[in-house]
Length: 255
Length: 365
Image 1 (cartoon, chains in turn blue, red):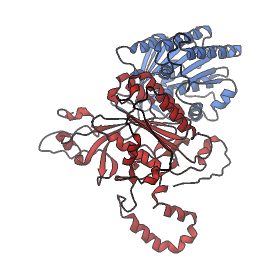
Image 2 (cartoon, rainbow over the protein chains, first blue to last red):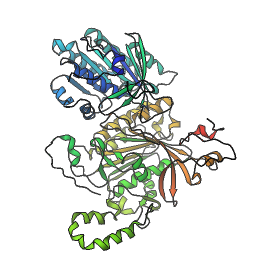
Image 3 (cartoon, chains in turn brown, cyan):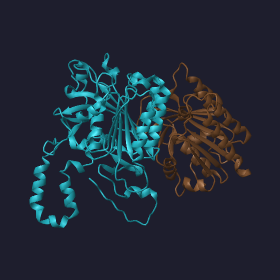
């Protein structure tokens, strides 16, 4: 499946050129969404781009939100004749089901955030075990960070530590790290430090917000992409469909 | 009605697993989901058929009015009418007492008719077609089945008549009081046990279960200040429900949670609703809306479950008025603006939305 139409989102991320080093290599992408506009479609889109790009790309999906069957069904509609089960069997897609992960409460001294340390170990091991060529083309996708915080009993410090560790992977193995979090769950007094830390950590920040006028059937919301690497910020509207996301500038129905 | 759909096709694969037979009170939904009724036919229509199995419904209460109880009552009654196992947890000392207030399905005679009398039409039809009955076979059974409340997917409930005892006794109904639990582990265990009877597998679904948790963060509950534990519980309940044939509904008063946790809870929900009380004698609202006198509250649909798909559901209207028709049937209606009174010079209100801001001051725009 080489032929794919790129859209404004791809342009903003630098994915529109079919240049060889995957533009997100070694980069951290942070996606922030809200109750009214869920950002999980961007994860699906990036997963699709990563896996259809060339045969040595590998994706590691850390799922806190939905089971494998949900993503399988969603991705099946995105690319015809293609599914996550076969990608998983071919060793190109690793699915870590974290739905039941819950760090035990109150064992601060023993293994603080023990579950997260084990998770990091697992990711590192998986990448190290890959063939040389694939090691350079790994994307780690996390859906989503707010649930990781719940699993860690609210200690965002542990989650941030975990993310910093994952960041070392971006320099050690040149992999890309893509995370989804919710912007509206942090109060201004104390919690916004987590968001700020993520914004600092991220090379590309994507905000998914509703329009100021509310929800509409033709325009599901707006995306604001800040790409530090290219020193570029873009803002446009989007509409999510079963098999793709349509992006367009305000006032137009397609780009 | 129980529909045994068998499809013979050359395609095999788990995508068509929903084609196998479904128990009473269940029907197929979009994207391979199976739906069950909320107990309020209007709400089913708004949500696209009902609640999908494996989803978590959350209802934000209004401290000024107990409208969430209406939703819970209808939800629970619908499940009992279809013999679906039920787990009910509430902060009351004796939750079983609540079962006495559940409404009974409206008898077909009392059925409010929104069109011509269905009985007469059916009889006319019968008179002409009775000799052809022998050719109908299976269809005839369905035809008779329509009159029997049990086999309908969704019932109208008569809030003035209590549910007959036989629906409640001898059923898998588990009631649990959450007031004195020091933490949520007991409730968690009860939910785990309940859901273990309803595992999800590819194949026929004979039975679906319902969990109803009322006023989850009510202050009289001992655990109500353990914010992260409550969130953890909701997350694990959601996971368990996702992998079982059941629907869970949790109501909670959002004013008792901190704003950030309230948002976290909202993100957890697959379907998110809120109910609002309506002031008596609000003259401005009375001018704005038709039928204001009959309304007892508002229902807002914030989020509709999207399972197995990434496309959000955008409704044409998200605010509905709650009315009691003939003081017994719960109905939801779209809001209609009253005709503007030209003489007074007031302008149109905002279309359809009745957030509290519309009550204050003038509504020019």
